[in-house]
Length: 209
Image (cartoon, rainbow, N blue to C red; front, top):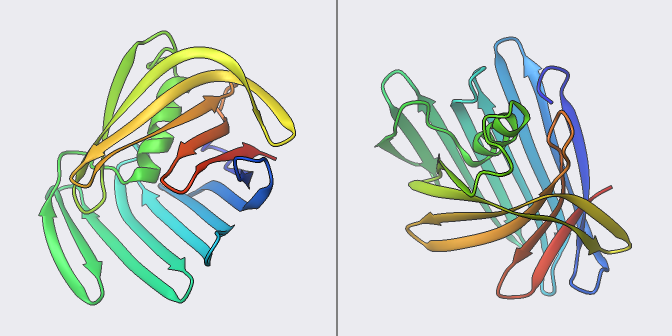
């Protein structure tokens, strides 16, 4: 997954199964650093949305840098994070304003936590039979993430049917709580093959191409 890098392409779907865009998940090594990136390109009812999330971590998937760029219609938001793992601090910069917060040992951004979760599954340190496990990521504040292993099942998204280990992932933080369901292939890389995300507008889905 990380030793040789990866690039995963996903088709984003409306509840009807019609495509609304695509997402790409990438990972690569650069010396002692791991580089992670997610790009999302979607056509929503009232505007076009383009999101980019990038992370740089050390070999333990502890965050060094995180950046997100969100474009929704004519509005763009940029936010960057610089982690100092030795001092247990993070510098968050948005709209020219920088704030420094205290973070725990080996603080992780959302992308770093996603890959850490997959790594732990691949190493057998988080067995699928485990009823519930937790993790934490930082994004302007700490968010607790719960991974609930559900019964493996087939799911149909668009024109494809997928079968894999099914997890409900719930993130809790200051703004509230958000849950999604993920199907993960039981291969060496623990590849995410399908996602279902309920939002106020609709329940969106993504499937591996």
